[in-house]
Amino acid sequence: MLKKIEAIIREDKVCDVKEALAEIGIVGLNLFEVRGHGRQGGIQLVGRAGTYQVNVLPKIQVNIVLSDRNLEAALEAILKSAYTGEPGDGIIFVTPVEEVIRVRTRERGQDAMMYPGDIDARKAGTPG
Image 1 (spheres, one colour):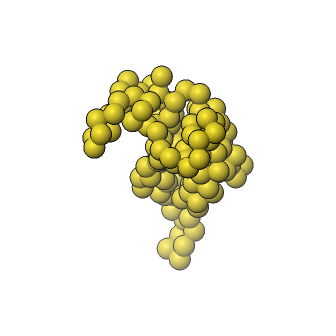
Image 2 (image 1 turned 60 degrees about the vertical axis):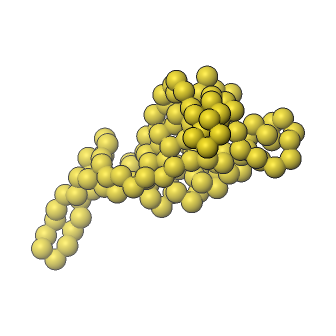
């Protein structure tokens, strides 16, 4: 079965997260600029005009679709690399994916998710 990870992280942690995922062989991902807030409810800024609340903060959403067997390794890579210990580190959602189809080749399921040198090729010992 395939899973989709949607990780909402700090903008300044994107490079760290991408590098951590690349190290374990996660090749395909999508990044989106998003805005929102979670438990922290935003931040309070002090300027010349006084103090004001910014409750919709810029974040990055990282989307990855991968097989069940690679889920925990990817989650651990994101958790370690996105962590600062401060409020606003982010959140991760994991959902099932019913079908994947590569448009060019019409491959479906796991075959559509394979890339040379990816985490599955590394586990199988296939050169990338």
